[in-house]
Length: 442
Image (cartoon, rainbow, N blue to C red; front, side, top):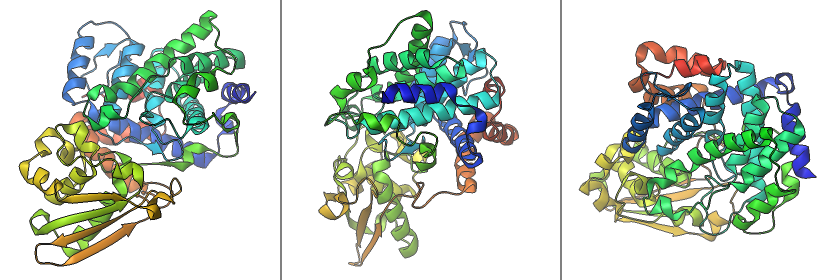
């Protein structure tokens, strides 16, 4: 069975089996994800829950971005994953149509910190979990209409990663993965577009349930045969492609096909924002110069058409606001998608952004998710630019220097200038979880 083959791959994977370039990519994804977690730790709702759980004074797992407060591994995995989601700056994968890393790393750090695992063990388990998460996603993508990918397939990757970290055998690993699939959430995309911030905790719940699934399997609980496919079939648009679970294992490393983000908004907005940045920079255009904006793109991006978002989350899932915020603030990072960025100037400009889905761009998905932006100025000039695929993926990758700049912008406000170099180095090695987590303290 394909799921048994995947479980055997996970349980047998050694550090020596991972090619050097894949290991390097893995540690870069770890570093980028740590940056996203620390950047999101200041979110008001996340901070409030963090304080509440830290006050209970129990556990050995670090609540990242705090002064060293600890809690249980379960709660730390939940909180840190939620922190890494809120900014919409966490690494993703276009063929999975979601974000594997944030479904895997927080649980690994929490579990590995309390069990004193090494950096090599962390990296091996992370790669195992990432490869699992993507293949499970590829089995069920496209998802049924209205289903949000966070919280659906990621928990199986979490379970695989924790099982590998704990060096469980193939049978126990398989049961953990099957049980985790049973805990897939009924996540809805409307939560993001309507601004319901429960969406920010989807990945957190997957991290939590993945740990629990492993502990159930260790205790002797068993999962449903063919359970990964059967449990997730209800969220798939069609019949699950079970062969995807074992396709290319050990030959094709999915982690190399992921993408990084610098725009703090839904990935569907990124090609648009790349095009806006190009036109604005080349023509020296700001918000005051704009009469109107026309956006042509693929259907999923065009569906994000709300022109007057009411909160931060809605703003991140609005192409018109993303365009308006970029032109108003001259930036697309963390501060351009906050409640404070929802100014009347930006919202008024947002209402002058028209978004259309075209067959041209629809036909290129998923290989390319592009956009064409046309800006008409108040003087009557018209400027247009097309982007075939957003920056950060294999079509137009970021350099390590680009990602280090992003990391510093997110992390320095939390840990300070004097600690950021050490944290980056520790993440890139990667260091043992207990060392890495200690360096995330504010």
